[in-house]
Amino acid sequence: MYSGNTVMDCDNSDKTGPSSSFLYTCNGVQSCSSFLIFRTQPLYNTVLTISKLMSTEAKVLAQINGITDSAQILPLNRELIIPVTCSCSGDQYYQANTSFVIPTLYDTYFTIANYTYEGLTTCDSLDKYNDYDRLDLHAGEKLHVPLRCACPTASQTDDGITFLLTYLITWEDTIERISNRFNVSLQDLVLGNGFSSVDDLMFPFTTFLIPLSTEPSSSQTRTLDRNRNRNPLKKGIIAGTISGGFLAIVCGVFVIWLVSKSKRRECNRGKKVIWALPKDIQLGIASVDQLFKIYRFEELEEATDGFSLENRLSASVYKGSLKGKTVAIKQTGGNANKEVKILQKINHLNLIGLYGVCEHDKACYLVYEFMESGSLVEWLQDLTYVKSQTWNNRIHIGLDVAKGLQYLHNFANPAYVHKDINSSNILLTKDLRAKISKFGLARSTEKDENGNSSIKCRFESKGYLAPEYLEEGYVTTKTDVYAFGVVLLELITGKKAVYENDDDGEEVMLAEEMLSIMGDGKNGKDQVNYIIDPRLQARHALGFVIEQDELALRMVKLSMGCLESEPSRRLSMNEIVSSLMMIQIDAQCSENMLMIMPKRHN
Image (tube, rainbow, N blue to C red; front, side, top):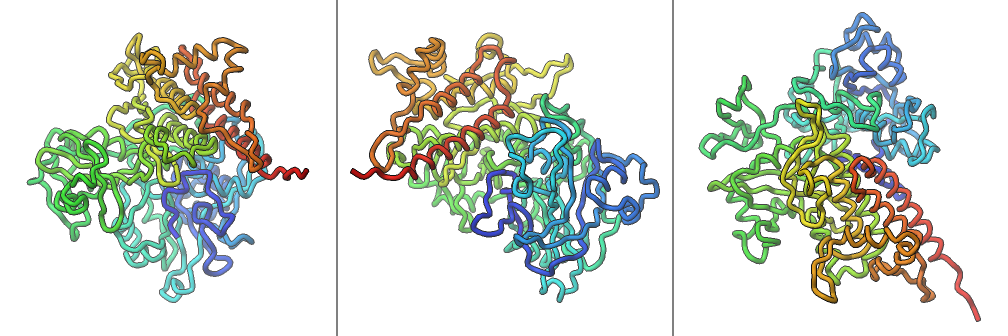
């Protein structure tokens, strides 16, 4: 069963039964020969190094890939076929086993799973099969690494399928392309991954099973295009942990929406659109397949009941239903190129998903996933959400936002500064999972010709402005960190970034107020209970108030670490994520302990 985008998260659970977010579930024979696709990267670019990483015999690996010299340095991002023995473990998961020694103190289960092993394992399964605390990994520790593989089911075997190949999806992949490349029927691909049709959504950086009647051959592999220079890795992420192949996936050429309606033409029963590009954009490219679905305006009209007031969510956003799926449809001006281009290059559970676009009458309509609980600012201010206003929920929301920014700053290629982080642009699902939206102001952090990584640009979110922007107009990833610190304060206090003083009605900057309070030393600590949102006051079943001074103080201190006036002194998003995860775990343990306290009897 296809896992979808959930493998990009590290908080999935399989306590109620096997989950595809971990590994593939056993539903066939107990053991079989299987294959994986691995793409060469800087530290793993020879048969010898890759065979050690995957615990395979170098001779066998060289033979199946048609390589005569096992020590030969291979081109980066060349696909290699990895033969493995896939077995069903005691907990009903298929896996091929290997081991890995953690090279640096900066490695995490997430980076090892998604960058070193390129999605061929998951951070959830690494956490499950190793005794090391995911927040306390050390260089030199040896990990058990279960690789994602699977064996054919009985029905697949009856249909002549002998092997399953685990393949990491790239931006340019479609089911049709994979079908043509590996000479596999569309039906076998759809059924083999639990899809309902060829139109089902596939996410880049997730694995896909390819059913084969014969062993895969080196003629079916390729070397991914690396025409774009890769961005230098960010501080704190060691080169050995980052997969060149994985990051280079996002470095293709992406088409922006510059073509009029008259130049479009549908092909392949309307499932793909080929664009006729202006000459200044072509640059030698004959044609490019569009990555997102192209909607007709009539479809959007029907989905929103003619863009009726009943379906209007805000000035330019409407709720709609397309093929039974609830979506949000945003009307923009004719130039939505920037946001679309960025959303083509990124993929993370905590970043808003873009399903497709429509161009009509000089306007552009963007079709997003629908977020049932609206924006964070609405959720914080809406009194109907009182029951869900708990520390655990607010910490989890903060952690979701931090993970989204961590991905943008450290793992996207090129890395991005969002540049407009605020509680209006953080959207919530019905389960209160947070996703960052509105990427129209986002900018790449690639260094300029003088070696500077900061960028000078317009920033309009009042109350979230970092000092270096106000003084010099420069924006870096630490500008996002400052804005995130303000969001944390909103989660802690329940107040807006800019609010009116109840006494005189004057505007108050939340960040400035908090820095002033906490700057009073001991007095600041004494006022923690005064500044936190009263709705966060937890009561035990016996009626007494559960003291949470320490938890609140840790959250406040974390926000202060984001609001340092000097950018270099601010925390990084890696540090913020680690801190929030520890706070979350401690908060849950503390709350559980208090709630199970025995009742006192007179």
